[in-house]
Amino acid sequence: MEYIKLGAICDVINGYAFKSKKYSTSGVRIIRITNVQKGYVEDASPVYYPLNTINELKKYILYSGDLLISLTGNVGRVAILDKKYLPAFLNQRVACIRPKSDKILKEYLFYMLNTNLFEVKSINSSKGIAQKNISTEWLKNYVVPLPSIEIQQHLISILKKLEKAVRNKKHELRALDKLVKARFVEMFGDPVLNSKKYPEKALENYINFITSGSRGWAKYLTPKGKAWFLTIKNVKNSHIVINNIQSVEPPDSKEAQRTKVKEGDLLISITADLGRTGVVSSDIASHGTYINQHLTCIRLNTEFINPVYASYFLETVAGKRQFNSKNQNGVKAGLNFDAIKSLKIIIPPIKRQNSFVSFVEQVDKSKVAVQKSLDETQKLYDSLMQEYFG
Picture 1 (cartoon, rainbow, N blue to C red):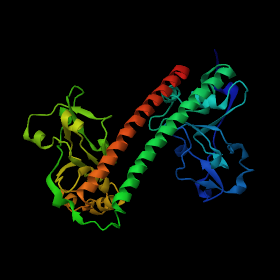
Picture 2: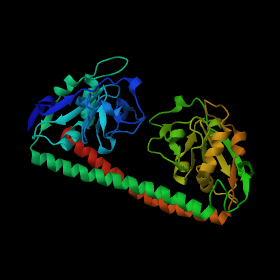
Picture 3: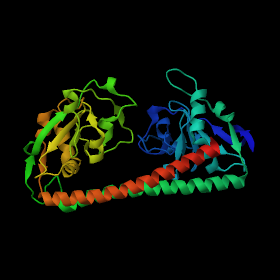
Picture 4: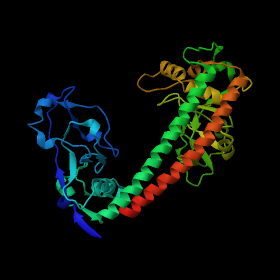
């Protein structure tokens, strides 16, 4: 296979130092470093330059499909420009790469540059202490593999099919989440308006036990630990995720006993990102699982309220508004037990709650299957990227 410097087959273009005093609310969009971070152009804080400057600055005009690379900060991130952002100018600290040879296809170049290998080499070659940066000269001298056009087309075809499969599976997961939310409203009405006129009570009426997690457990965290330790990152959207869970070797103490969760416990985040919820499953409880100080654990009277129903209610707009209004510390978010106990929740008949929870369980089974397929597809995509370009 032939290897060649990027500058020999592509134009590598520097951006322009646009003057902020000339920024406008319309005209020609300026593609800045903040827009080029994730493999696509983010529509983040758009700024514009007057339309009448196009002729003066035509050297910096971008075109649909241009490859853009961050030169500062998170160096080596590659995005491809979509036509919906046109007309657009190229700002400084972002480089534009355009193939000038028929030996290389733009999409192949995008995949080749959008790899961990290129990003690592960019970081390792960058200069600066406070802020990393690379130059367009470094990019011009970057050596790329150059297979035949036929092989490039073959690689592009395979990778695009896998990308499409990943997108479709992610879309399916989002659709299943929307299905549950729609079912909630169908069964219980608008939770803000309480349109079905169910009784509305303070959560404290149904709490059998409430506690928060332990502080200072860093010394007990160990990869060899047999128990699990839950933090805010594990609790969100009425679920508890364990793919990034920490292992712990808990002490034999009353404190540990107090913060060990049981099946059906409702967990709520009480600092930082308030109101994230999840319910402890039998698998999590049987593993031996503890919570840190940023979570509160609530055991509800299940004769009247299903904890999964309660979790989904608290994740609605009606619940989120209450968490925001009860935030005690302003800048630094935080809730105490009194605030948690005073949360208002509508109480439908328990049979109706349980029916909703059964529906959620069936949807979750579908989500597990879709997620497994997504993970396998993503793994195949990553392995092929490593094989082709690693």
